[in-house]
Length: 72
Image 1 (cartoon, rainbow, N blue to C red):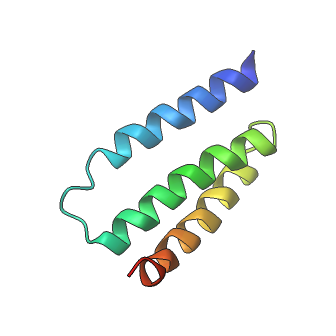
Image 2 (tube, rainbow, N blue to C red):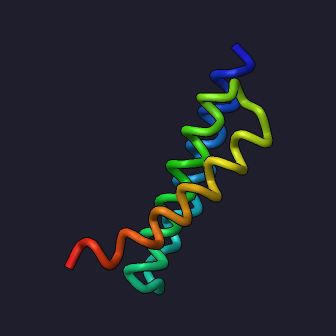
Image 3 (cartoon, rainbow, N blue to C red):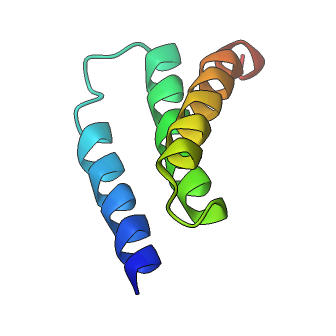
């Protein structure tokens, strides 16, 4: 039960954070989305570990930031 609450909380926080992306560049939006998805994935894969969540967010942000060059 605790694990599902952590995952739902991470998803809601990510959704709220991404709602403010209107003034960002395309690359910044990709990095923010990558960090949010990576954070949720890290939380799921590590059972809600803070280290896994932060690590997933960092890796997702880096990947999201790099995706901008591939979409053109």
